[in-house]
Length: 433
Picture 1 (cartoon, rainbow, N blue to C red):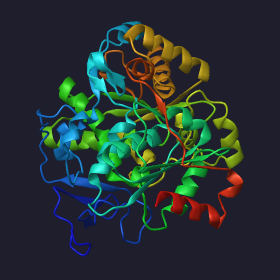
Picture 2 (picture 1 turned 180 degrees about the horizontal axis):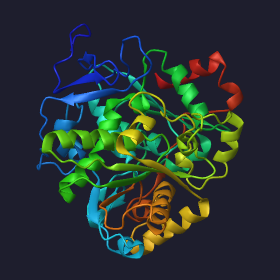
Picture 3 (picture 1 turned 45 degrees about the vertical axis):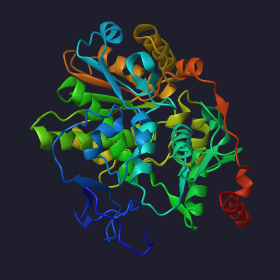
């Protein structure tokens, strides 16, 4: 396609959650152009029916409600959320209407997310939203998101720059070696915020393109398929939705999906978002407490807390709490709440889930199970309520038994001291070209 030609029309438009301004999507847009405080863009689809495509057994069965510009034959293998009614965990907790949304690798149940977490859903949706013109998609990650984008980009030949702290490198093990289009940069002594800052600087240079995080409608609508899968299986919306939260993007996406389902079906239930965090790293929980300021912890306080948590994939210290349409608004709109649990409780809960349900789960999912257990035993939720528990990652040990794990090789290793040097960006650009 000629670079000057307009993109082909899409089956959706973008609308600002603040001013309701409408945009035709170019596959890259992240922000409203109007002059107002930051607000999330949202998709509005031409076909408002809930109508899964039964010829697909991947997240793309919901392509009518995904901001995808194109499809490929191999998209069928992208995987999706598997939803089932719990027996083991439900029996222990005394929650007869507990449903589990499993995101990971569990072939006996049909779960085949190849990096073991629900981040696969957002990676595939974001890549299918991109325009035809080539960009180097730039992603900062604490681990799981980066792994999902690295694998998806490698499979699809999409150039990408993935920046992570070195302590997350253990999550970059795949069924086969990554293709050269994946440029993995590791910050040896850094944390997630260091990766975010470096990715933001790189994205200001051509041909790098910021993936966008929560601002990317592809990411949110990809994660929204968790609830679409649940609604298809449960035939109703849950009354409570439990999920571990680092940024809270998945929970925001679930609420947006619930509103879409309500408009399509007349369903009246709004799932109460129950966000779960791992003490002592609890910026969303701290901000949600009455009379608490929004996310006022210092960098050094957060860096210290990161070193102490079981679920380090949840250590986002700049979650989109106050942005219009973000975490705070979603909690208020859903009459939700934020819970927190200790390392020991989360580890015990993860082991308990494996014993009762038959599959290993990731630390973040253990946090969600622990918080659900506390809520159930303390009477915080009605025991007869319909509850959906999002297991955001699992089956990594099961995956390791089926596939040889090939560790990813970083293209470049940096130190925090080198991040502000102009030569660092030059080197990144040279290696990514």
